[in-house]
Image 1 (cartoon, one colour):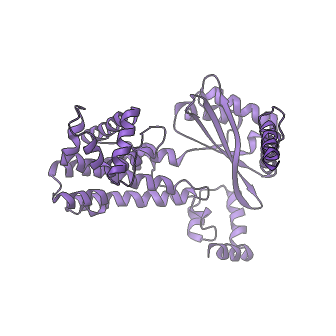
Image 2 (tube, rainbow, N blue to C red):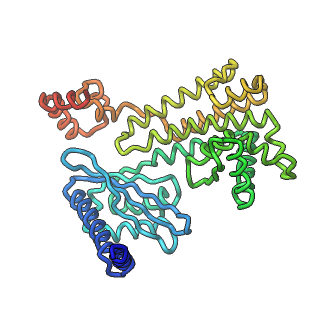
Image 3 (cartoon, rainbow, N blue to C red):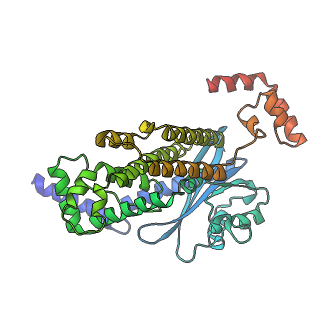
Length: 391
């Protein structure tokens, strides 16, 4: 009797989920509506807000537009997902702007209160004539545009000398050869299991996912013995690479350096990170690049863990050719980071140090704004609250 009752309850539950007017479906819609209304209310109550816009294509080839809003609530900065909308046609700047503008008009959000726009560096977004930025500036001339720091970091990480680029391409081909064939994938998994490996599968590389290069190369290097065993007596043209110690040295270096780039990328992915903290992290990374270059030139590869372990394991030293390629790559990374993250002046540092006389003098503000800043600087209660919060 209890079993029959349980079956009836399960059947009833499935009916509620699958039905077009199911209570569960209504609850999901109600929750979504309530979250949206809360964010809209907070945006309308805020004196100003900024938006971050991104357009991407998912695995089903559907272009999706995401708009995240940041606003002030109870004197604190908050953010939330404002809009997630499919783009069924083209994804030009005009299409993206029309979608956002229609939503703003429907929800009675004022463009004049939007003070900031953050996007990637694509022409459809940042184009000064027909891109999203140009169309937004037409309705909100005072808006400030920012190139997303995470996207800039991904672009700055792309330069690779030709030889190292060949190693990356060959690595992807090896992974694809094993992963794209079900039989190869199953055999490789069984081989890893028999050898007691920490992992049983390789990872696929995709340009859309910025962290994938580091993860793919790290996993491939960790499973290099298993891959070598898999290709034993195999006619695949790249099978000999895993017997080539110089090629493996390059793979180990790429694994290490992309892991460091991934770690930098992850430190930038935090809602509480400010532009000043981003600049500090980038400056620190650029100085590390110079330090790593010096270490390689002085035959101290221990700063790259996988490379150092491999050299110790094989009782080898870095050849002059590989050393030159690593130094060249580190120089190219330094140049790329300097291009995408130019050094900031001290004119905006008053935001971090509002009570400092030095940064007050260097602040680029209008006379009325400086007058307001003087009032803030001389408010002892605000100064006490500021010091307490920073401690």
